Amino acid sequence: MPVRVRIAPSPTGNLHIGTARTALFNWLFARHHGGEFILRIEDTDLERSKKEYEENIIEGLHWLGLQWDNEHIARQTERLPLYRSYLERLLESGAAFWREYTAEEKADMERDGRAARDRVIALTPPSDPERELAFDDQIRGRVAVQAKHVGQVVLAKDLDTPLYNFAVVVDDLDMNITHVIRGEDHISNTPKQLLIYEALGATPPVFAHLPLILGPDRSKMSKRHGATNIADYQADYLPEALVSFMGQLGYTYDAELLSLDEMAKQFDLARVHKSGAVFDQTKLNWTNAQYLKRLPPATFKQLIGKPDLPDSAVPIMTERLERLTDIAQFSYFWEEPEYESALLSWKDDAPEVTRAALELCADLAARGELNQPALDAAALEQFAGKKGSVYWPLRVALSGRQNSAGPLEIAAAIGSERTQSRIQTAIHKLAT
Ligand code: GLU
Image (tube, rainbow, N blue to C red; front, side, top):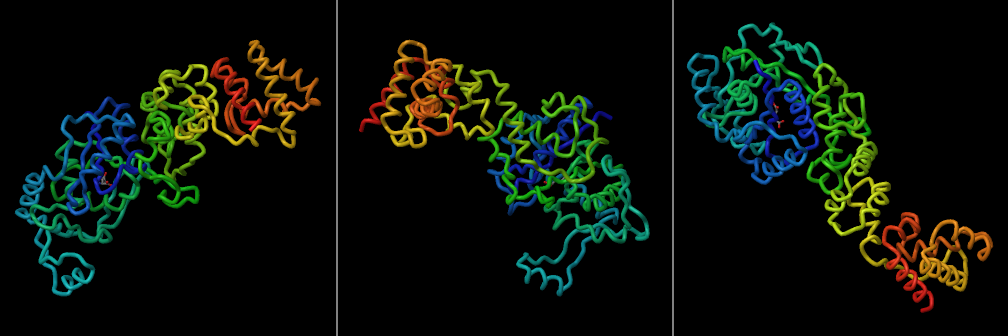
């Protein structure tokens, strides 16, 4: 049977980094085997599901490059007649029954603020509760639990209101899903789902439960560890970088920077780690920096919205940039710097010293000789060997900042004309 896997997000929140990583591993598995990757929106929870979350999920997967193969995205709310027919079948055969709530249970529901109802559709308990329910997890090995520990399996609130465990089984069967690859947080649902497959007389798919993503303190990754919404990464990171980084959350490849295709080529479920994967922000930033450096200058300039910058400015920026929004620190490449004149003087240099240094720079620049040997020689001869007395004012004049790319690098990138005019501006500033 050809491999067919799915990502089945519930649109009750934005695309979570954990869901994106699950989608990625499914996508890689499908591509490795030449199979199909299906997107199914699990929107049966009508109260919490929102169209805007669905849109966020779709956009996020798209941005990451995790294209799904189904032309029409499956939505559970569009499939209610299917679940109904399965429920009727189970009720008829006696594999499921209408379970009446007791008065006491109804009172409990009301007290918990849940709408009280008279009855639900539940799975008829297995006749042999001593039996073991087991599956061969492709990552974790054999997982087994006693049937009696599984508890009651509620399938639906009524014929038109299926619940997660039931709808997911019907869908996975109906869509011929061969492998269910999902987060470890679902592992306790799997025995319930096995019972549903059994009641339907169907063979379950193969299961694989991915290790959770953890924060640096090894607790489950949450907002307090950093952004969990993929959309929050979009302004700062390249999708190639995020994908390469996420692919290594629970997997070791033979390289640190990998494209989707490179990962797909190697991907093997049996090599997914069993233990949780720690989210390392420093590594993500490093990864992003590497991909930024690889971008063609025109692409980079487009990305930061500065298509007119000289190409020579690009490597100066990508050499130092980790996150795209940090680009603001390089604003001196596209606008005149603003700064206080006091910033121009190196340490306790007197204004006359600074002025002399800037005039020297202006002179050299006018002659096309603003370069390191000339500045070093001047520092030695005229500024008591203090390079800072010369380079610092030049840096501030050109960048307006105390931390910047090297002043000569900036001068080369912005060109002689702008270099000269910025030095003149600095000389004027000093005088006022
Ligand atoms: N809707 C479930 C979720 O978002 C899908 C779980 C599954 O893959 O079976 O977690």
